[in-house]
Image 1 (tube, rainbow, N blue to C red):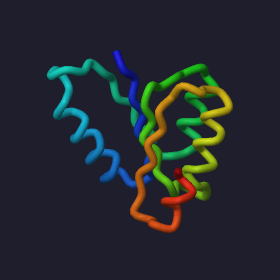
Image 2: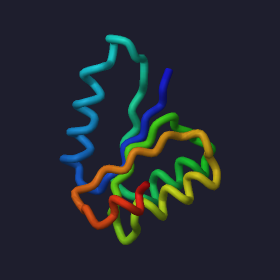
Image 3: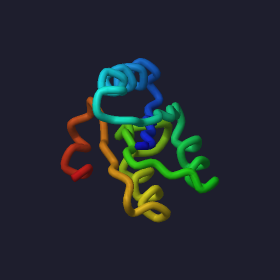
Length: 96
């Protein structure tokens, strides 16, 4: 089973990503989705030894950038796939 995290401070974006993922549930993939609307919440999950296979991470969340949060996740979990989501184009090169 894949564990997927969605972290975005825009609840509409969280719901949209979750809806897209739900379309694939029970087809080929078995997964559970965890949602976070604050960067501190996903970081606290990692501090509590929670791990995710895939992380959808808002590029601008709270007072932080998703890039910074991604670095913090990488410090404790090198294997997670991090997918940055954003409407801010100025961060696109930094994400790669």
